[in-house]
Image (cartoon, rainbow, N blue to C red; front, side, top):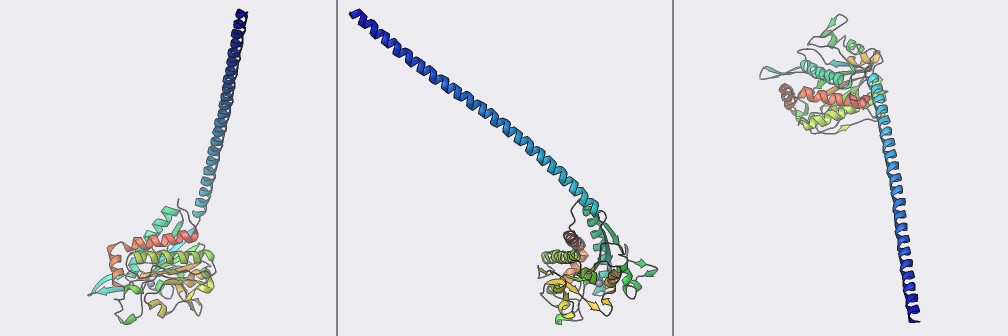
Length: 326
Ligand SMILES: [Zn+2]
């Protein structure tokens, strides 16, 4: 009897142990199964990520190709753009003397700026730049220096026929003894860039953008160089915003530069701008600064000013014409 009971208890115990073992085995199996599922999920995720990365790369490559194509298109368009630059006057015109010696000459300096500007525009943006003169002398249609700076001056503007833009480079002066001081000893406050546009440019959004941008970059440059008290340039939003040029404004001190127009009896007052208007080309005179300010003349003689102004002009032209660097 006792033996039977012991057998039954041992049997029960074995059954319990067996059941526990089976339960534990089942649990293990379940965990393994879960791990397997997670592993597969992870693999799926990795594959998806790889696929997405590949698609992203493909998309980026496609965008790069498209950008390069557009850049090519822009460069192709820019290579057709023609700008006519007129270095104002001619050699030995508008000289300033100090102690009996020539210390500045507008006709010589504008040529320096023009040469620098041509180089920047052609090398950086690939546009075509034509100069009305490449030396101290100017010759158009058999006319020379003095004639092309007086009675026949409109021929300079007409030289821009068929081109996209005409820009005549100058340095400014004031009336004798303006501001109650010697003509050529003007304070730096008189310096302001003035951009005088012709009647064609007044109607052209692009030309006004160029005029605004050249004026703005020159104002910044002049302030940085310490030859002006004004860093700002008054930009114009359209034809009605353009200031009528006057001597009072020209010679004013501590005033912002702006875009001006000057009308004469036959359209544009300045012959050089009238010439560009005659051939339907937007044109402008850029008065960079005043050569009646001693500090400006000093910087010009140092050799730094021509490059600085050419950079400022180029920046303005590129911004206004929306040129891209090659
Ligand atoms: Zn001039």
